[in-house]
Image (cartoon, rainbow, N blue to C red; front, side, top):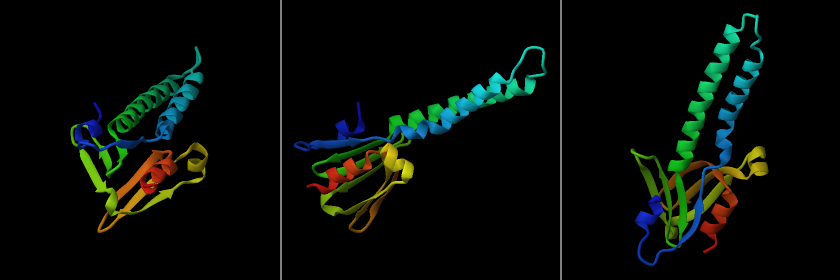
Length: 151
């Protein structure tokens, strides 16, 4: 069960649920491609021990990176309700930040060239007194901003 389902107040409605974008998997894919490239250099009858070791190292690093990215994506929630914004990350050591909609002054969206093409970016929510830390690599950041500002 998602974190937001546990903390919704009576009468509060979930308007939007954001996610970390799939682009965070790209380093793992790159390492897997390097492992595949190194494995093509292994030839019978040649001394290919260093290529085999490189392929194993890159494949192991790809698996670890993929798992870390999957875990980050699985344990991060970014939700907009009709009353507040809720950001949660972590599994055992949980970090949550909530901001009432009345306290939101602006929602800043930063997108790189690739972010514009693939629809991801960084979001900074500025509120009266303080803001929420930048949310990095969020999918559909403009939709998120529109759900916060279109009240």
